[in-house]
Length: 348
Image (cartoon, rainbow, N blue to C red):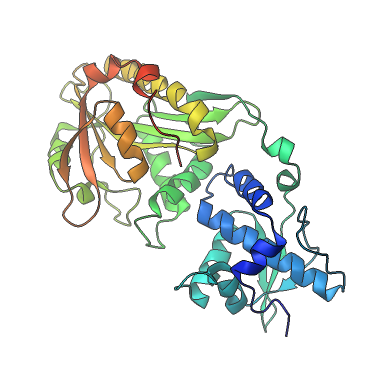
């Protein structure tokens, strides 16, 4: 039996100094679809497989490590081993949940996994950005841009899916479904769909959706907030009908999505908020009676931003920690975004 078959948090702290661990976590968090929990699990798995590979080659280094390298080839790792690595310091964490985490790491392009008929074999994918901290830490320019359903739907869907995980554990909430919804919205009215884009590689790292709403759907803004969910649910029917340009009965715009990937929040937030104002001005050319803005506070970290922008809480959900917020379009357009966000705490 491997000496690492009972790998524990103390082993991680012995082999991987805190500054090196945080360096890898910070680099991983810049990837679309990554959460801190997934990054933590990947680093733990990476360390475990590295040490296991070194042991098999009889070339075990002395702790602490100054860097991690990627083991070459496939290494045996059962779901039980993975559960011990991922959840050794937690009260809960089954073999099944470890298998699901491995599948998520596969989907994120961090590992490859195969079953040889006896046990899982895992191969860590080469990720040069993790080994070159200067490159991964380089501050890139970002700019608002139109949502491109051909190129942006999949990466934005991955980013949004990670945003909903914290309260909805339904495994059917997958990026594929969200991508199809976003492309459907774009085919009806694309003006309100915008991304924050890296200037160097054109990758989208932020997204918002301003959804013009038919008057018949306005009553849903006064119903329990959970009835307004769609991207994060498995219901096929959208509870809100989109209004089309020149609809003078359209009075409401639904902020159906707002997200910036964490490494870019500080530099991109004001820029993106100003873009929302410019987009609203364009939308009022198509919808001259656009008066009301509504949104759902789904993730707790956005509550402070909504408050700073003058949104008022209107109704809560009896079952979930969700609530509707409201702001008049005219007042939103008059906000000085730089001043309004000046006192916000740093995003987690």
